[in-house]
Image 1: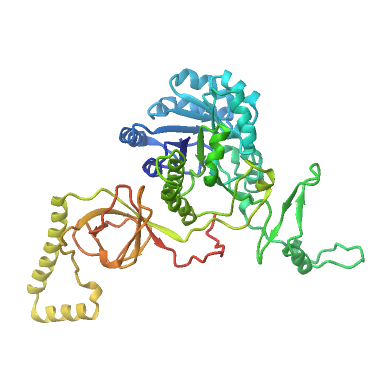
Image 2 (image 1 turned 90 degrees about the vertical axis):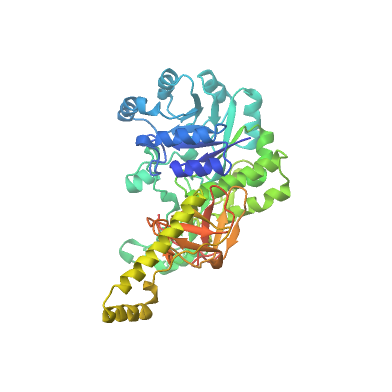
Length: 502
C-alpha cells in the first residue's frame, strides 16, 4: 500500500519524504481545506522541484478540495499558469465543476476524488471512474467490508483511505459548527475545530435554573453541574432516537462533540485485505515533528507488512507514536460504528518538544574556519585588554571576574567532531540532554558533554540557543541526514490534559 502523508509547508514536505512517505499532499493558498496551514505560494515551486529531483520515486498530490464559489473559480482560473509550475502528479478535488478544467489544462495529471465528496458505495465509484477519476479517497464513514465490495465491483479504481489523524464529528467533515460559532467556514478552509472546544456549563447570568423536577423542587446551577459530572448525560438528536453522544463534564469545562483520533497502524493488514491501495495520514496543520514521526512509524509498519523488515524491528517505531502529540484513538468506522461514536476530551499532547532541525555537516575546511574565527575573537579581545590603560584593564578584569558569563568562550578542536547547522525552534540551554531522531534511528540520547552550541560566524560557544539565532552544533556523535532534535517537556505530566491553546 502507498503511504500518503501531509505537508503544510516546504519543510514538512521534505521531512515527509525523508521519513518514509511514498507521496505527500500539499495545498496551495486559498484553494485548500487547510487554509490555515502555511501552504505553498510565490517561488516555492522551485524548492519543490528540487525535492522531486532528490526523491524521483516520490509523488506529489495537490488538494483543491474547498467548496468553490464563483469568485473562487475565477481566482483559480487566474492562477492556472502558477499551478503549472509545480510538479503535481494528482489533484484532490470535491467540486465536479473543476473536472473539465483540470482535464483540459493538466492533461497528464491524475484526478483524485476528495473524501469531502463522501463517496462510499460501488455505484458512485463506478460513476467517478467514468468521469476520468483515477482514485477515490473514500469517506471516513465506510467500513472495511464495504471497501471490499467496492474494490470487487470496480477493481480498476484506486482506493485511498485515512489511517491516522483527527476525525470530525460531522459527516465526512462537512461541518457548519465553526461557521455558526465563529464565522469561519470549514468548507472554505477556515475550520476553528469548535467541536474540540471546552464549554462552560452554567445558567444565563448565573441565575438558578427554574426547572422543577417531578417532586416540585428547584434544580440549582450547582446541582446541574453535579448531574453533568456524573457522566449520565447524553445528546440525542430528535430524528435519530437511540443514537447517543456522551457529554463529558470536567472541573471547568464541558466537551460535547469531540471525536477521538483515528489510528489504524495495528490493522494495516486488514486494510490491505479489504482492497485499500493507499493509506492516508491527516495533518497538514500539524508540526514537522508530527509529520516526521508519524510518517516513519507507518513506513516501518508497512515495511513489516510487506516483509522488508521484521515485526520486531518495526515495533519500537510503531510504539513511538505515543511520543507524538495525540489524543485517545479509535478504529473509526472500519469495524464497528460504535467505535467512531465514542467521544473524548482534551487537546493532543506530547512528552517532547521539538528543539531543532540539523542540516548537512560543514566541510572540514569550513569547520577549521569556524574554529579559527573563535581563536581570532579571543586574541582580539586579549589585544583589546592589553591596549587599555592599566586601571581600565584592572576594572575590566574585575568585571569579568564578577560576571563570568561575559567571558568569551570559544570552541576548541576535538578530534572526530563535526560542525552541523542547527536550526533552533525552541530555546535550549547548553548542557541539556538532547535526543536525536532520524528516519532510521529511533532516538539517540546525547548528553551535555557530547556537544557544544557555537556561533558558526564567530566560533564562540553559546550558553543557550533559540529561534532566529546563528547557531551550529559541534559534536562527535554521528548524525544522519534529516535528523531532528527533541527535548523532554518538563511540564508534561502523563494523564494530565494541558490547555495548549487553539
